[in-house]
Amino acid sequence: MKKIVTIALVSVFTLGITACGSSQNFDSKKATSEEIKNTLNNTSWVLKRLDVQNRDFVPTDEQKELVLSFQDANYGASDGCNGQGGEFNVSNNKVSFDKGMSTMRYCGEEMKHLIYSVPFGTAKSIQIKKDQLQLLDANNKVIATYIKKK
Image 1 (tube, rainbow, N blue to C red):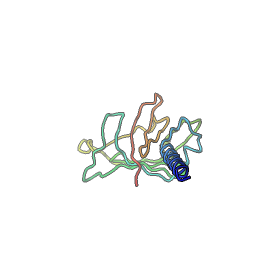
Image 2 (image 1 turned 60 degrees about the horizontal axis):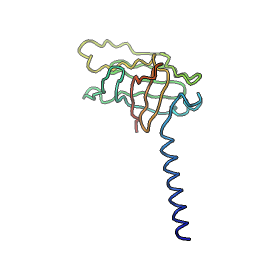
Image 3 (image 1 turned 90 degrees about the vertical axis):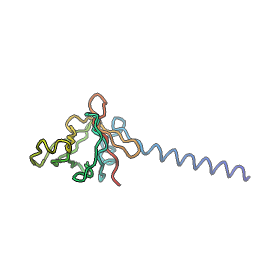
Image 4 (image 1 turned 60 degrees about the vertical axis):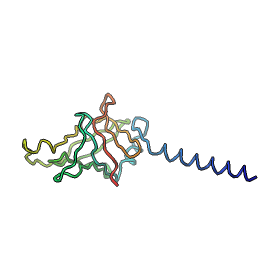
């Protein structure tokens, strides 16, 4: 009897770990529009890498982090000099970042090393692996990688 209870507990524990692990991965190409919106709603992500430029984000005293946030159907982000935001749309498993507002601060040559311009307009899908959000283009190439903000 003790052996059966032990096997049952180990099985339940293993299934629980498997279920938790699989829920941390998310691919928008395999999700409904509503699932995509719900997954991103009320989340914030910190830029880790601008993959399209093969460039890691390097924090400085002036720029500790660059955040991408989602609230309802809207997003907000910064490139290190200017902020932008707009509507985040999902249709037929395709995502789009429609530019709404943007600051227009002059970002001269002296700020070039601080600017990480994520080409949100080329993003067509997302995937989340554990605590990393990746924006993908139409060819499924990673544009940018973010880490979930805690």
